[in-house]
Amino acid sequence: MRLRYVGLIMKNALRNRRRSLLTVLSIAASLCLLGVLMAMYQTFFLGEGSPDQALRLITRNRISLTNFMPAAYLDQIKRIPGVREAMIMQWFGGVYKDTDFKNFFARFAVEPEKIPVLYPEYRVPGEQMAAFQTERTACLVGRALADRFGWKIGDRVTIMG
Image (cartoon, rainbow, N blue to C red; front, side, top):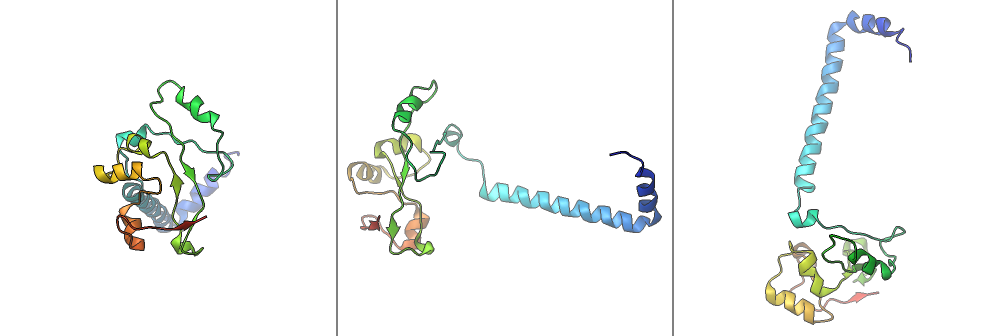
């Protein structure tokens, strides 16, 4: 774009200085407000994770979370220099109670003995972790989800799928 209209733009902007000043101030205020709100969102909802989380890499099928990755990939990933541990974490689409969206929550099949190694930030008492690792039908549930559905330790939760 050629700069032949710059003089005309400046002449028009300086014709009514109060209007130009208020326009610039309103744009500056809106950008400042946007920056503050984005910073607050980052602080409250996307806070910095633990150092262990910074080293964790999650790989999934490029098609969908529900599709399996080839089992051979697990061995290939384990052979990469610097990889300490790898596990399969498979999402499954079971249904709790009914198909109402309010009853939806993520469900993953995992290798129980690797959870404390790969997710050290999970604070699970030792006896509960041991029970999870030995009982084939056990599951780990966060406090918020347990409170939402009224679950207690030892409850039987049926997931149809």
